[in-house]
Length: 323
Ligand code: F6P
Image (cartoon, rainbow, N blue to C red; front, side):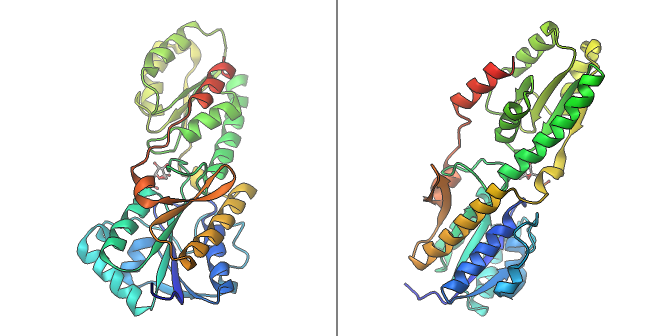
């Protein structure tokens, strides 16, 4: 194994609160190991364009509390091509990068896994996404902050829903997973949660709206659910249940911003140290997961192929408490 003297770090895919905390932990741990560390701007796009910047301890000062990612992020179609990965490899060699830490979602790890099969530069990953949908880790960096953002927003909407006896359909992110929706449903006492993991929710929604005695309701709609988006559902059901005074809120990208919670900062810090430890231990193509309060190594091909189940216990808690 080639001795690692200089590493790269970048953020990739949809950004999430805590990514700055993660980059900070990688940079400071690398320096602790007397390594040089380069930030790569704008994910794989920047790797292909050669947007590399030497990092010092000062580069990551006062960012632990900042949302977003100062290295910026991007999605790169070009990296999915052999030519694109060759350009990226050329830049890594030109900048004498011996190993790389990628902070992102499963798409980012998929790219890293393919790259590491083509070129002898080890990558390790940290789960950076608000979706919490990555196999092998209890939490992804950004999920806790997004959950708190959604909870705060729904608490506010509940006030006005109650004042005007209205039913609100509130759409949240999560891609094809329902973790944000379900945990926000439990945290806010929503009357219903529509998530991609459950079939036959249209009938349940119909039954609820035609039998409930409640004068106001909160119905959280995970964007990937199989009934449809909040606008579409509200339009269809609003017409048939006029007495409910149906309204819609699509929370959108506010869920991706904001100052990371203490938990996300803590999670990002622990996984960042572990990522550099792993590289120094000659590990490659593994994600730093967090399971039962411990750091675990999850091979890229397992976290990419694996599907994180929503968990029967969480569904049961929501079922009992949403009545
Ligand atoms: O994966 C994170 C995420 O926020 C998803 O929850 C959402 O569906 C997607 O990114 C939105 O992507 P974009 O920022 O490209 O619109």
